[in-house]
Length: 367
Ligand SMILES: *Cc1c(COP(=O)(O)O)cnc(C)c1O
Image 1 (cartoon, helix red, strand yellow):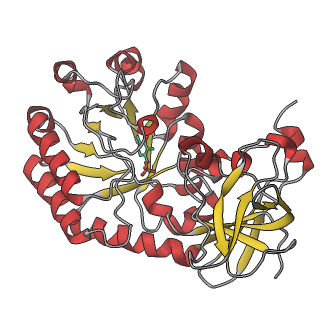
Image 2 (cartoon, rainbow, N blue to C red):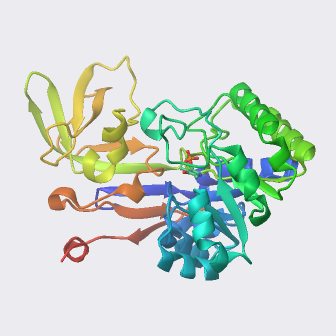
């Protein structure tokens, strides 16, 4: 089947490799796994994912509602700040409501006191390669720092959420961090039912010591008698997707530049935000070097520089890999460019075009 580019392709078989790891860790460690929808909200594969995970976690009412409607199981609601109208709706659909501050907890406590409530704590340690994504950055607004404030409100709470990692692939670092949190919060943990260690743990990366990870989790939950939750986003969906594009033009302005029918700014925004090149599989020993660039009018709309085996020609396909996390959720209509379709290769091998976007979707996104 020839599908019109650009399109995002999610391969359920590749997704399953991550999900099988989650299932294994879940069964061996007793930890529960909720999918972080802010990373990935492509709900056409939720039916598969929900068989391997315990539910979803969210950053807003809309994400919580999507989890409730399309994923099922547990719905963790979290938000940096809730407006009143969201609280009333969240009360009906969520299994846990997690507040970011003591003032939000107290502001809404009387409305939600019968729910399973949690609070985000900021342990002031973190693992992140980017300050932009570092919850322990200076003057961070993410989570309560003062432990005395948490203790004062402990009777209202069933759990604490710590999210302090970003692509942490270092199990020794994680072990150290959990030991630190255990020691620092031991008096608080004793009074709680659950603790979430958030997302950002890169346990599906090749070579990650999963057995060690299981023992670190199990030791913690045994020692402090709490149910552990993890909130993977990227780890749950990594390496399961591609963005398929076509070369529209080739020019040379000092270097060969191939312009494709997609854009970093519109379709892979994180490349720009974090200044990282797209993953395009080529061999460094290849001879023919090209800058792969997007078709938006942004001067810096560049995917990266790559070497190809043969000279590129107009009409060639360029495939960017690993585009599910923080990519599809951020796509936008900049320049009015055609939105990549969403295509899923199902476990049974059948390829389904789930969604194609038209001019009217662009038009409807504003008025
Ligand atoms: C972003 C986020 C996650 C998911 O992070 P990943 O790095 O994608 O695993 C989980 N929990 C919270 C609170 C987050 O903000």
